[in-house]
Length: 223
Image (tube, rainbow, N blue to C red; front, side):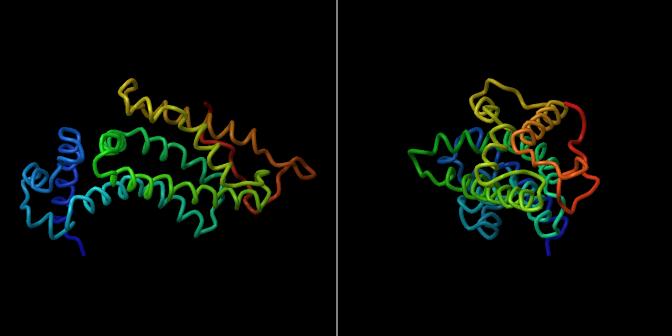
């Protein structure tokens, strides 16, 4: 069990890892440099992570953790899939345009011709983990008649494109500042609304769609 002291030390190490990554790039971001920045022993980092690849994999996995947990919990507990998709929007948009994701993706771009491992980890714990879960969510929504969707994987891709567009690329290349919360909410609402227009289910008699999720609201607020 992790003690509060260990948790605080791990947080310092993670903050130091991001700082070193921004300053030196992935290839030169050694465990020794990170340990010095975190005022921790090199032995501690080796005991906890073994090598820098494992350390940065853990950072990437943790960064995507909130979105993954939201989706996994919703699927396991059979929550309303469209309500979950609505909640996912701000979480996912914050994730991919946040400072941590930007630092990791910039470093991965510079690492393509060196180790190439950072980009692989980002793909593994990011898109390759999140997109199948979004597809499963939309498959459920289609099965219960909330949307009309023959290809959940394609629908998931379209939703993410509506949500993110070129925002992540613009953040990575430095032409866009971090998005304020109201803009994240507005963009998320708009993506959700457009997605429902594209995949609207045929109404049942009485003007309602089929499915076991009565009382579902269409979105969090006005866009």
